[in-house]
Image 1 (cartoon, rainbow, N blue to C red):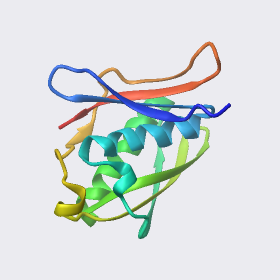
Image 2: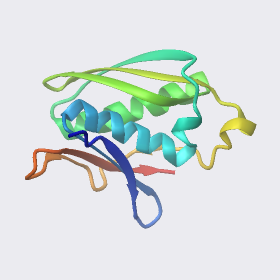
Image 3: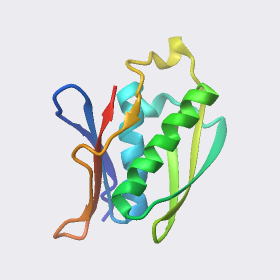
Length: 140
């Protein structure tokens, strides 16, 4: 049964992003969607260009932060917003692809600018039903 989804959670000054999925890559993908949803509606982002991202970290939690920060960097330098993601994992090495388009202020109506993913409430784990959860707080 499919379980991939994303959500936001409350945090004092910033915004928590959380993704879940039947697989760990799915949870990482959904956390990226949750992050983009802080800025704009990911469903309103056209898949005009793809950007590849590679990350490596000592553990899965640090890998999640590296993944999200790499996406934040790519969005900033390319002036893009992404709406769909694909992640492949080999241990703590990640290869990801993000699809999106250049930011159009009228179309995307960006709500905030994300400064970075943080270690606050950082967690990557599988729950008792076998669903993978990945979360952290992003600084806005």
